[in-house]
Amino acid sequence: MTTATQQLANLIHTEELDTLLFRGTTPATGLPRVFGGQVLGQALYSAIRTVPETRIMHSMHAYFLRPGDVTRPIIFEVDPIRDGKSFTTRRVVAKQNGKAIFNTSISFKEPEEGLEHQTAMPVVPQPDELISDSERLQAYLNANPDVPAPPPADTLNAFEARSTGELPFLREEPSEPVHGFWFRCRDKLDYDFPMHQAFLAYASDFRLLASAMLPHGLSYRHNGSTLQAATLDHCIWVHQPFRVDEWIYYHMEGPVAAGGRGLNFGRFYTQDGKLVASSSQEGLMRLHSKPKS
Image 1 (cartoon, rainbow, N blue to C red):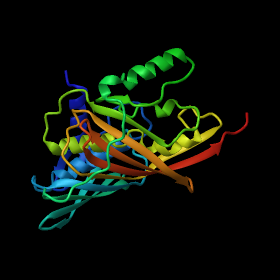
Image 2: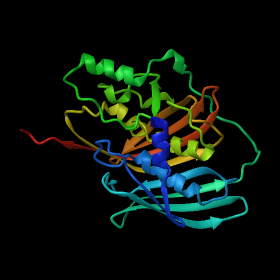
Image 3: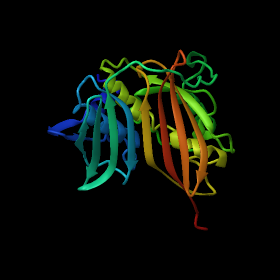
């Protein structure tokens, strides 16, 4: 039987149709639109296969342009816009029905030694001190049978997650825009580092948008009005090697919301406190009053 981890690897490993042209599919999971992390991972892995193996992705800057149709394949067009002495740059456009739904610029470089420092990892419980988020969610739903379950982001259930605080999508009262969780693949990922990067890109979209919503007491159960939320742009920086089949702590903050948008930042730490990657995301945050019955 194929494990959930292998299913996600198969999903991210897009089909090569021609030189610089790839095709990705979306699993039938019941979601109304394609999960953004899927497009990030598929676009990144498509680009990775067009650069020398010695060059490693260090930054990815992406824009989500249209909702993805879950019933149609996604075509990824890779533009080899630069091959330099140390850096390689790729532009990837994802299309459906002849229209762009996503585009990204990705930079790769040769590894090198240099100056080093980092922000210390926040003091949080270790994963073996926590229960899984799925157990916590199930306990909450058992105690509140009239509450519908939130739509899962990790539809393949490829990751185990353990939050260090209250689950953001269950919070009912305003709180500080800071939260985090540990995550790792449920099974060993027997691939080289590029696939681990693509898995991290996939996971980087988990709950990041929720950070700027926390001060406003918003969740998927918000009843006072209808919340319209969508990712507008997303960035990832990789600082050091890591493995996604080992515990990684994802620390997130949402420092500002204004103009119908919320800005969020994330940092990825290994269990020994090494800062290995960072992320940022701006999302649409609109409240529409519900029509009176």
